[in-house]
Length: 359
Image (cartoon, rainbow, N blue to C red; front, side, top):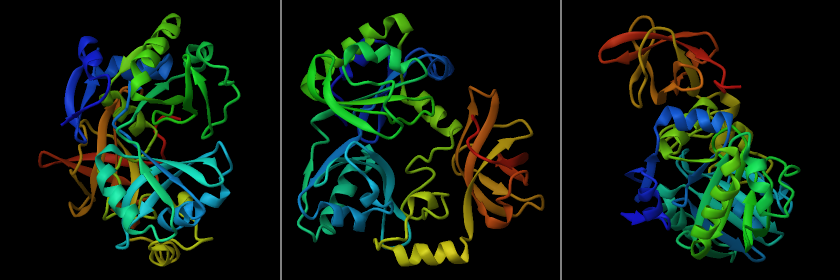
C-alpha cells in the first residue's frame, strides 16, 4: 500500500484513512454529509494525489493518441483539456482519462489510480508511432479545490486569471510561490473549481498556502466519500463501477466522446453498435419507495425479471433522496419508466430519470 505525499498531514487533520486503489487515502474528516454540502455551498480541497500522470511527446504523439483514445485529440489547442476514454479491442474500456494539450507535440494524460500500471502497459504495447512516453505519477501531487467559492479562495495565490478560465482549460505558471504548476478548470464534483498539479517536493507548501488563502472562505479538507456522492449526483461515471473492460462508451452514454471521424482501436465495433443500437444502456434512477441502491443489486421489471444491475447508488445529500445509476435493457431506458431494485430480496420501486440528478 502506497502513501500519498501528505499522508501524515491527513492523519493529523483527523482523517479516516482507508485503502483505495493501492493507496492509503482520506475517506472523510468531519463526515460525509457535512463535507458534501460544504463543497456544494462553499469550497473544499481534496487530495487526489493517487491519480496518474503520463506525459506523451514527440512527432508521433498526436497520431498515437488518436489511435488509443476515442475522442478527437486533433480538436485540442494549447491549454485545452479533453475528457476521453481508452478503448480495448474487445468492445470495452481500458480506462477513462483527461488529455491535456501542452503544445502541438506534448500532452499530459491523467488516468485513474487503480489503472496506472494497466494503462501504462496497454499504451506501451500500442505505441508504434515513436511517441515518447514518461510516467510521472509518483512525482506529482494533485489537489482539487472545488465549490462556488473556489475562485475567491485561490486567486490571491496566482497571477493566472482564474475568473476567466473556461471549463476544461488549463494554464501553467506560478502558484503559491511555486513555478511551473498546472492549474486546470476541471474536477469531478459538478460544483466548479480547479485542479492543481504540483511536484511532491512542493506539495506541503502549496497545501498550506491554499488552506491559508481559503480560510476566510471557510475552506475545508474533503475526503473521497464526498467525492463519490458529489460525482454521482452529477451522473459522472466512476471506472470500476459504471464503466470497465466489459462496457462500451456507447452503452455508458459516452457517445459524445466517441468520434468516428477517425480510426481508433475498436472503432468499427463501436460504430456498428451506435448504428444498430446497444442492447443495454446506463441510466439514472430515483427511488420511489424507501431503500438505498448499492453496487451490483439486481434491477428488475414489474414481473420480477432481471433487466439490469446497479453500478452506483447512494442517499444523495443534496437531494435527501436515494439515487443510483445502472445498466438496463434498452427497452427500459426511457425517463419515467418504473423499475424495481432488489434490496435484500425485496422489490423496491424506482423510476428512470434524466441525469444529472442535481442540475
